[in-house]
Image 1: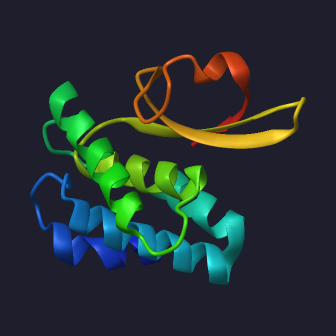
Image 2 (image 1 turned 45 degrees about the horizontal axis):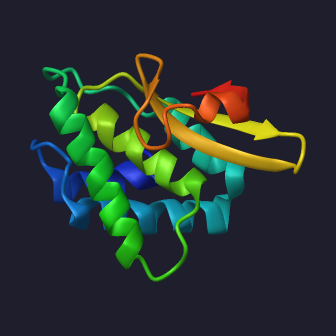
Length: 141
């Protein structure tokens, strides 16, 4: 059974690499709707269950293009796209491109703050490379 985010994005993406800001924009909108009506648990579950495409994995340049598309879409998105939504969308779009991406969630104590980012093979791809130094990892999905 496909998730709400997959249903919203799949017709736009087709079989091409999902590096388009337009695709990322609609994926951010879908993530926002999932958060609004289903809450954090529903978004988390959607990302956790999102399958990795069986096609040939994207290379480093294509991974960067997907993350750049999400960043660009976030600039034009009418609401503030939080790190959680950006990371969820980035993870799902990278998985659609055949990349074993993980959404990582962490927190720090002082000042208390939660944060989310995307990793590919243990390397941070949508944030500062040393983000793991400042945040204790709580979960990966």
